[in-house]
Image 1 (cartoon, rainbow, N blue to C red):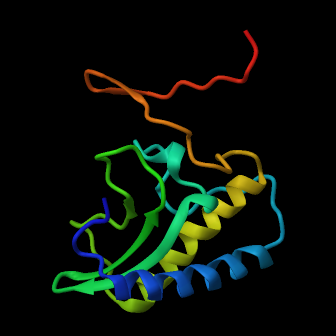
Image 2: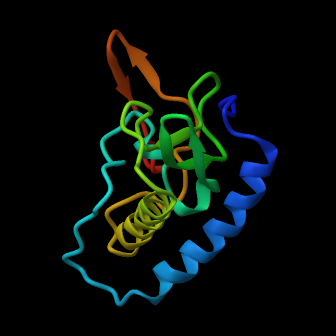
Length: 142
C-alpha cells in the first residue's frame, strides 16, 4: 500500500539515497551504548522497521516543506508502508531532510548491530485487540 504522495521517480531516487546512507552507516564505529537520534521506535510498525525491510529512503518536498521517509517492503495487509517525518512537522530544507534520512538509516543499522532491533521484519500479521496490537512469536519449541 504505497502512499499516493510517493511517485515511482521518488522510489528510484530513494533507492540510490538508501544505498549511500547504508554505506555511511557501515563506516560508523560500533558503539554498544548507541542511542538513536530518530524517533521511529515505539510505533505500531516497529517490528517491521529493519534494514532488510527498507525498500527506499524517500526525501521529498511538498508545499509545506521537506520530508524524510522509509518506504517498507513488507507490512500487514492494509497497514501503511511509510514511516518518517510527521506530515504536520515538515523539515525546513532539503539538507535537513537528507540529514534526517541518513540518521533514520544509521539509527536502525546501529541498533541492529547492537542486537536491539529486529534484523528481519516480523513474519505474519499481528493480532489487534481493541486499541492494542499484539505481536506473537514462536521459537519452534513447545
